[in-house]
Length: 275
Image 1 (spheres, one colour):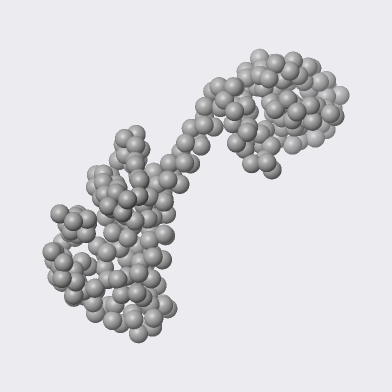
Image 2: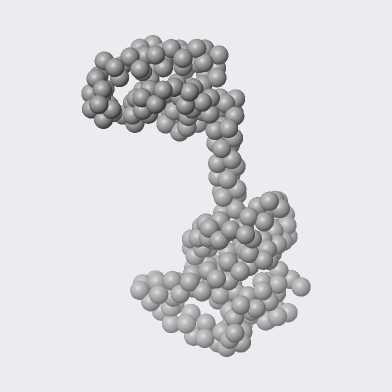
């Protein structure tokens, strides 16, 4: 069975209306939409309906794995390498949220290519004479989605890998320093995460010191912190100073990264050099 036939058979399993009836209706609709060059409000209504009808089919095919298998086969036929790990296959089978994340991007990518290739350039042909005859517009569109799946999947898989790296950094202080090199130049590491080592040091402090540090890192001034803790600005500064001495020792051993709000003059540049 050819790729096109396989896609048509898979889509037919989701639809009750006979294929021939769908094709006749689609041919009439395309003729009407061609009058306005596949633009305007009527085309918008058609496109929105197409996306809505595709969503449950894509969900079902992605859940079963059929969509992945057929997409990979298309790329293999074209000589383009494409691989989906068993772990990601299982996640896309079990998670509604992850499936929808990919599907939404696939739909947005496919809608543009579909309008140009299927309609404007006449790629969809209701009189096609292949082994299984022509397909309906919905089947053609699902096939277009399979071509766009690789790009959406690679984006999704890369984001998951990045998230896993951040999670590892939260659990492994050494991973945090490896992560630093991959951060954008304009982003300060402390704005992205604190290391587990930092939090361990903080959790070992008295409750008032923990509160001072957290409020300082949230941007509160000493007077505001003192008011919230029913203390004095001097006491706030003393607690922060005592905690800094603990941090600097750990930082000198490259165990932690000190948030900018806790620095004194000159320490930030020293820390950058150490990184």
